[in-house]
Amino acid sequence: MTAVDVKNDRSADVRTRELARRIEKLKKEMRAIILAHYYTVPEVQDAADIVGDSLALARAAENTDADVIVFAGVYFMGETASILNPDKLVLMPDDHAGCPLADSCPTEKFRAFKAEHPDAVVISYINSTAEIKAESDIICTSSNAERIVRQIPEDKEIIFGPDRNLGSYVMKKLGRKMILWQGYCYVHEAFNWGVIKKAVDTNPEAELIAHPECREDLLQHADFVGSTSGLLRYAEQSRGKTFIVATEPGILYEMRKRSPEKTFIPAPKDASHPWSTCTQMKQNTLEKLWRCMENRRPQIVVDEPLRLAALRPIRRMLEMS
Ligand code: 13P
Ligand code: SF4
Image 1 (cartoon, protein in one colour):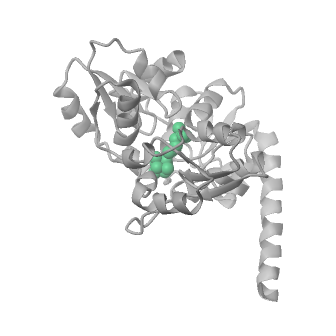
Image 2: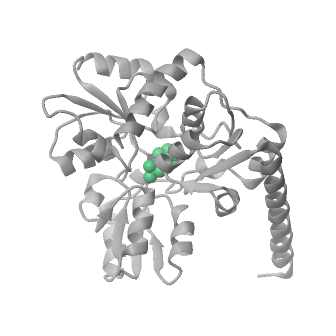
Image 3: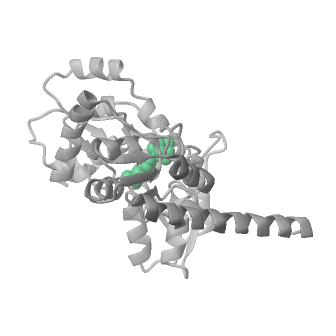
């Protein structure tokens, strides 16, 4: 490291501390709660009151008595918080931080897909737009998808969308057929067994842990499959000392905090995929977090008829899980 690098590092540290101080002050003045997903950058996770997976954050948004919810995540997360809390001000550091998986399911096409199976129960992953939620009977997250599908009577057809990998994982786990929308998350799709096998062979003592948004060829070789909070719990409780982690690498920050004595290796991605980090989640910088609180925008508001239609399947999820 050169003297200039050290100086730059120091001034970045000073700026981070100053922003964190301003955010803390504003939080008290505004009676705000800051929610952040595990895939956001470390300094944003540090500034948050609650860091969690999609289910934990939806529950936190439902139960908070704060006046303002500041959501560092992707758009559908802020939108869900707003659907659950129409009377609260919901802010996001960057309302352009979308989720390509959610966006891969356009409403008109999904309606046509549903029309082919008019008697099916429609279960949609929370990683979906408010319009798709409004078209659904029940919402699920990766933490509760299995539990929710189990509660649907055996004689009922199920449409599951938009993530085909989570859908086929649940199908295999429960031995139950579902009709899948063919969406996927580009981050998790970047991992495949061909590439990860080499990492497993090089680290034979390591356990392979994976998120169910990963492809089936990889999941069938994993020692454990779980949502972000499931992976965190497993890594903490396992006797294993080394883990190859096949999910968005933002989670490693919390894993290393909880188990500093263990080694966490981010799963290598396939060279043909440009990204194995969620560039949308990383748009939530500390600077933007402070700015959205200071300016009280961007605000997330959902039209009332759409909000009510999307609220019903979210509430069903919260009751069923
Ligand atoms: P969970 O938070 O449910 O594990 O989902 C991961 C994810 O991709 C969030 O967008
Ligand atoms: Fe969407 Fe994948 Fe990013 Fe999650 S990790 S927000 S599913 S693109």
